Image (cartoon, rainbow, N blue to C red; front, side, top):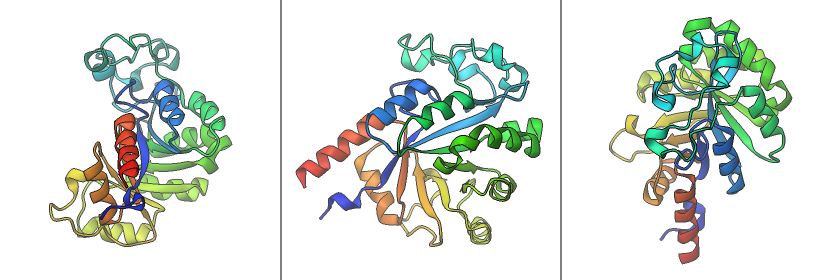
Length: 253
């Protein structure tokens, strides 16, 4: 029998990205307005080293433009719509990407909300770890205690812990014995993993000093399965749909 306690906590993956363009203030605000206490967004650097909320290295998917984020100044990127019209139609055609500083200002006003901040590998490759991590940590300083800094890049996670003292998370590229040994050595506060990288058999997740977050989860059954395997969190872009499923489940119980 299911109980209200067998549901993992929800992280808004790039904000409420099923309803709004991803990595935008509007999408993050929507997630918070629905009562979520955890949001996640991605950070890239522009050519003039301004940290911005952006997932891809280029604008093709969200703006249908070929430019690379790293080749544009912040002033140019700030005026580039990211409305994802192919996916969302024209409802958000005049939505623009925020800088990390703007997201920090918003987070400062969201009491009790924690942000998982993913530093993207394309920026690390383009500008180098030292430059990227210095710029990001400088901007995050006012809300660093409300943030968890995460990355696929293991050396970056190690440096972030030493540089900032903040909570850190490692996003796994593989779920195997080598990654498990690396996680045990690092002992981050959080481990993130794509559901598609987990074994097909529903075995328990690796035990350790970390909390697990699994993605992308869009339905109640998958959320419960994640919790049963040991995940405290699930990431979803479908914030409203999953919250509705949670509410229906609790009502039935």
